[in-house]
Length: 371
Image (cartoon, rainbow, N blue to C red; front, side, top):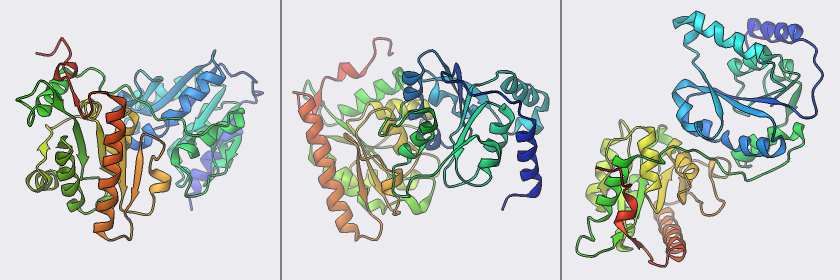
């Protein structure tokens, strides 16, 4: 139950919204996705392409958390939002709010979670006073939204749930991929990938493929037993690939175990841009249900998501070339056997796409500008 003051503010915003008739061909569209999670921002990027295709003359913009601007840069015009500015830099925050109001958006879409009401997003939606305000039907969204969209069944893919927000605009699509331009040109990481790929192939003119492994994750309950990643590392080596452990702060012990027991190599510390670049240098990624899994899918690397919780149908990506392994409630040996089989299939498919099989020329991984 939301606090009475919040409900009052939402009703006030609706009452103060000027009466403007919706236009058939919107000229300006704003997508709201202001939370800080990498995966959540990426899961909203499929909204952009259908809007651009349907309304080619419209300006499409996303309001994104300042720390996540890089995720959508090059994909869509973006405006930075920082909730903490409301008390750290109040005048800057007020200027942003007035700019959003003055922009007179024709359509605003609240792309926050379908299963959890976002007070901040709802307040922003009402504040824009756009004649068409679209949101998922949850919480008090109907107070400020002109169109509320029923959430899809829990087992429906999250991307399709986001795309359902376009139905009030006459757009009914599914399966649109996530996109990001992160990691396109990072010479340091490209050089590292080339060097890592020659670890076991120094005596030959060709180099092995890299297989990225992500044994960590922000939520510990979303991590499968690390022994699964040890086994996958060993399998990658048996296939002539080089397993690389991708890790973040607090995951050093997990990464070290996969290195020591699975024969993998440790990736260097990375920021988000560098992590995306490293993922672009891999032939395949195997990851727990975590933000880096969505990032791997968004950069286009074939990705196997291993789900320790019964949520793989919703949050996973199982459209080719990506796969999902459901681990909840299953014996570890069965999960490992399936994950190894799926990894083999992904690597076989990669080999078919490249006549050279699992090998490729190391020089192709290093831009001319690399030191």
